[in-house]
Structures are given as structure tokens and as C-alpha cells.
Image (cartoon, rainbow, N blue to C red):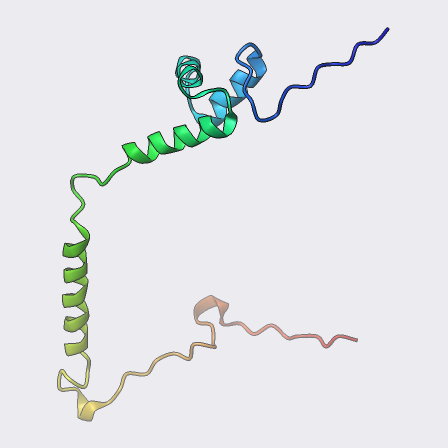
Length: 122
């Protein structure tokens, strides 16, 4: 008589199944000891385990020491935009306030400028 294979519960981790443990440790980048400790602490739900791993990684990736705070970055960008407005050709004493020619935004430039003929649909 045939016995049906017991289907694993899809959202729970079975630490007795080496295939499941291998897949989860590779996917989440954990060692088997870290996974076992985490399952003992928060349970065997795959969603809870992946959420915990994600929260641990984002906690470790806080702001590096060499990055200035957002206020410093905002003040620097504000002064750069003011400096860019002052150095336009008309303000810098250009020839009668002549504007620089800008390429048309609808025309590609460079090697992409080749026009490909379009065949009408029949």
C-alpha cells in the first residue's frame, strides 16, 4: 500500500530537514548556528525569520562616520545653485546677453542621431 508523502508546511521552517535549512541559510546569508539561534528566539515562521534578518541588516547599515548630516548637504546644494545662477553667460558680460544654443531635446545626439526609416503598416 502506498503512503502519501507528508507535505511540509510552506511558511514554517523545519530544522530537522537539511534541505530546508540549506536553502534558507543560503537565501538569507546566515550560518546554520545563527539560523538555529534565531529560530529558538523568534520561532520557525519564515516570514518572521526573514523580517528579523532584514531588520538586523538595516540596523547595522546606519549612517557612516564620514557622511555629513543632511543639513550640511542641503546648505551646500543651495549655495551651488546660487553660484550657478550668477555665472550664466548674460550675467557674466556675454556678447549682448546672447543665449547659448541648446540642442533640441527631441533630436538624439551623437551616434544615435541616425534616422531609421519607418515602414507603414499594411
